[in-house]
Image 1: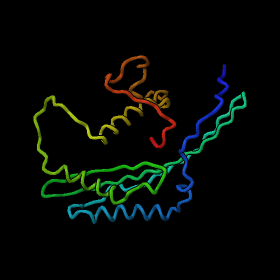
Image 2 (image 1 turned 120 degrees about the horizontal axis):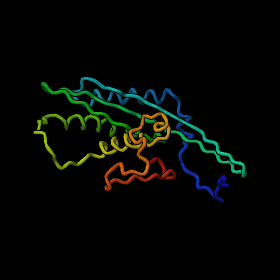
Image 3 (image 1 turned 30 degrees about the horizontal axis):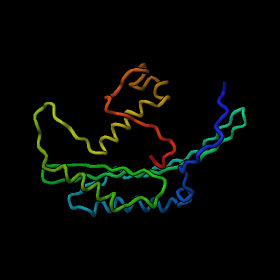
Image 4 (image 1 turned 180 degrees about the vertical axis):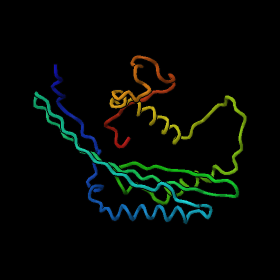
Length: 189
């Protein structure tokens, strides 16, 4: 039968009224500042690339025949930015991504600094011979790989036959050293 619902539900903090009320001109001014500061941060910058802002909000309403009536609003924004740096014959790029639902948490100088530092670290690299090497992934790379993997877990992807996990229900699909937990009530995880 249908689950009648629990006696109590914990409220998640996934909606920011302040984000919805922030005028678009302020958000555009922030993007312009990010782009200007990327160019000003280092003389090797030849291009500020992919600087963009995305915002999403949704409202979910759940009712059942037992009288359960739940409603939840959520919203978030993301800012992406990158830079192209040139030094001698080398050209390097780096991109950063920020996601939250509180604009006050966006530290613009730190964000730009990470973009420039990431590209700068790539200069002077040398090729190594092909082979097996012990590898340590930086947190951003680990997050990208996890994001790719989790995208394959979305029911819509499976139903459209575009998930590499289709047909693997009950099978081991990753190393036993990897565990992924779903924590829907954790703030901005």
